[in-house]
Length: 320
Image (cartoon, rainbow, N blue to C red):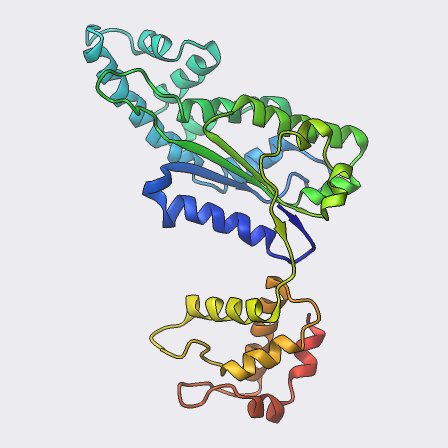
């Protein structure tokens, strides 16, 4: 996903995550993780730090691992019954039969034996970028592995795993070594998790500039590009209408606490119509009115006359 600054790329990634995890949760039956940036506070690029900070510490991964551990315990019992394996058989042997690959077996055993979230966290801890990429791809494979079963055709913990990475335009200031390593990580993620994995990345750049950020071996693996552009006036007004609707409580007016005419006037004052500027303009307008003592109500909407009376447009525009 590419486009100019403020065109809504970050919001689009977060919206996609929310759609997968909440709005259409049952339909997707998937996990979705969001990495705000691969760049550290010190200016270096680190997938290990991003994996630790955004995926382990700030996402639902540990809860997902806990549910996977329970899922695996249940599926081991089912596998024993379906394949005539004695109930007392060592679960580790059954896990080996199910997954086969030492990479998956070792991680599955650790997760199966973990009893607390701290133990689950310890089971996936690694020390560097390369191992973090490997650990994440192993988790994707475990979560989407279809355990052989004659009675359950789709015997996966999740149908898919999604990873969204934002602010990759930071690569413009990276060294050639760092840029190459990030590209290598993206290629490895794509190649190792084909089939049940979606990787979405956002970058503030134009189409012609993408080759400055990504190697050919990454660009040729991209399945779809989405251009994010500036909004026109109608789109901007509709965006504000929708934004207000998400925060409105028991008021039928679609533009409350404004009139539609006021919203259109505010939109006309903005040079480049981006979601970020629109949100900021509406927030600043309400804040300036609040400071001035104005209290909107269904019978006392924010009209053009109110804007003139409080003389706040200059302050609003200066904040954009």
